[in-house]
Length: 221
Image (cartoon, rainbow, N blue to C red; front, side):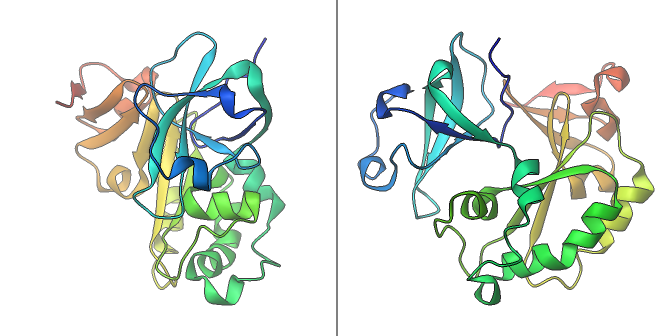
């Protein structure tokens, strides 16, 4: 049985032919992606035998939505596995990259939370591949794996450690039904849930977990 890959997982594919697209490939893709670099699992409705992925180029706007053949996945790395490697500690660009400095400062609080956490976005890509993806103005993107609603005191304490860090940190709660921004969840009221079938507006944050969901969901246009 094939492994069910999750959003933000990094996948290395065997041949270039493992990729397919619903539209024309962008001109930059052959110049900046090859099978030695991973693709990123994205949220989308499933297709038998395929996994929704994205390919990134060196510029922020260079993002391409694709499909990868599940049978051609040779290696996978989850955000939690990237974090466990702690590659930022000896990174040659640590002194020049605020995102990695923020990660180093935030690491004790993340560990103390007791939640499974991982690194996504540009930081995750660079730490996993060694390819430059971060710049001096890059944010740090993290996820917290939350199969159950987290204790509010725990995530509130974590959020309070973000003040004074050298860059903006975007933390997403990964629930069984999708992703919710930590700051929205703590604010209360309506929150946006990112799901495989598109964004949903939830009347209250706990509706992101099936056991708490009743009539609190609204499809975004």
